[in-house]
Amino acid sequence: MTNWTQAKGPGDSPKSNAITDVACPFCGLVCDDLELARDESGLKVTKNGCEKAIAGFERNVNGAKPQIDGRDVDLETAMRAATDLIGASKLPLFGGLGTDVDGIRAVMALADKTGGVVDHALSEGQYRNFRVLQTRGWVMTTLTETRNRADVIIVVGSDIHKLHPRFFERIVNVEASLLTEQPAKRTVVFIGKGIDQSAVKGPRIGNIITLPCELNRVGEVIGALAAEVRGAPLHGDSVAGVPLADVRALAELCQKSAYPVFVWAPPSLAFDNADLVVSLVSDLVKDLNVKGRAAGLALGGNEGAISAGAVSSWQSGYPLRMSFASGKPDYDALRYSIPNMLASGQGDLLVWIASFSPDLGPPATKIPSVVFGTPGLKLAQTPSVYIPIGTPGADHAGRIIRVDNVVSLPLRNLGRSTLPSVANLLGAIELAL
Image 1: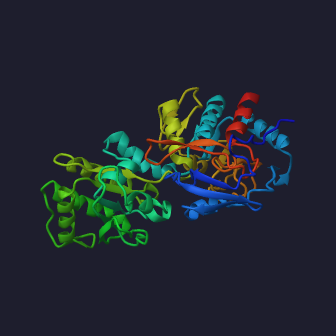
Image 2 (image 1 turned 180 degrees about the vertical axis):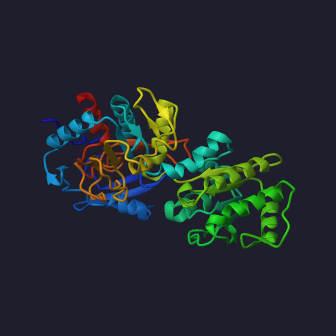
Image 3 (image 1 turned 120 degrees about the vertical axis):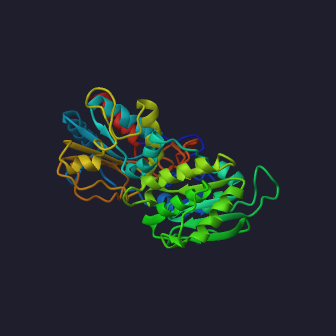
């Protein structure tokens, strides 16, 4: 019988108690300053953890069993059943993709061998960025550059604190800077109503400005702001309920500041034609760079989405939503959207991967499904085969790419469980086919 359990890495003995400098894989920031402890009940976050980190690391993953049609089986039996289903499929759909770099490499290799379609569960939000990057280009920055240089931070219609609880703590309200011993206070601007501002506090925070408008009208405010910057101001008293005087004041602030950064999170822009907002922001940043300096910063990337897009791009030349059915990578952002394919009756097998969060469950579908999921994964229906897998950075070692696409961070094996990695399982299936 194959030994699928994880070997312990150097320095990761479950007998050790204090664990420092831990990288957290449960959001795209991948904060790497966490401290954890281990006791009889498992891992405990003791320092620098947010609610996502606590929920992720402290979750009990013991006791989960592989299943076939809801019936407990041993891992060998489940792997044979999964291999048979994937091998017999004419058009397998590889979705979810909540895994790390090694996991996505294994997905790509298996999809290539079986003629499958590859798409991340959160790629609809990512494509609000991809479409703009592909058609217009943009000027972007990084988390580190924002932390050290930005003097004005404009949050565009996005609840950053909900998606990335430590963004303001780690990037905005930092007391030290690489560039100066006494960095100046920052102005933080929110464009949109109902955005959580509770984390915007501390000695680095200066003015907090809000331009309240409905989130689906943020684009109108950005358009008016761009018109002011270009010297073609609008007429009237307001736009989308925001006084034009406030828009003009923000335009003047952006033009006078040393380094304004426009921040948005694609998952928050969940309304029709949201990619137009990203396009407007990108064009505005370009205009500000004519006489000064400005940049954009797109956040998101939870559930390993950034790693999925990056690995897909460097291995195939395309950022997900592609098919290997023709024997080579075929890219189409609409045609190879797995939700669209399932809705239209395409594909004969859904292979779903979710190793980080129990919330990334597969959709209900009429076709058979093979689910490689973290224990407790929310299932809309009983899959044909379910195999519990470990989480990179908790149950096994791995590597993940940060939300700004410039840094890949190692994830340690913290010995939480001996659940196998999806990379090992998919690699074994590929070899067996």
